[in-house]
Length: 158
Image 1 (cartoon, rainbow, N blue to C red):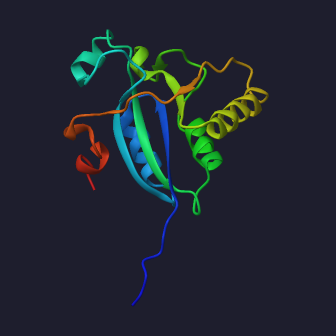
Image 2 (image 1 turned 90 degrees about the vertical axis):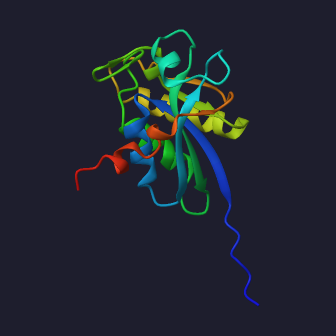
């Protein structure tokens, strides 16, 4: 009888602007099992997209990344996070403006916290503008409405 191989899964959570593109980019990384769009970092239970866009819940649009630590490291996920958005713009990514589009790393444990801080310090040395990314402990993740999940895949013109 064959035994199923055990995979070491871990979680990471990032806010880097509109979650559609962020979700898509993380889903293409080898070792990432699943990416889900949602909201975190706010005060209102069970927020909706409309509530978050009205800018009164304090939530960020985030992605929850489930990944295999044997195939991709947290450091590699951080590298992808930094490359796929501008961490020097406060509450803005491109044309999207509002605190829900802020740059944020939500850590699950002290190791992720320290790795994220070190990653930020290393990147800051290379930039001439200040990084405004918040690094904060994970808060409740609220899954976004189904029409936001895998948005680019559902609406691709290919």
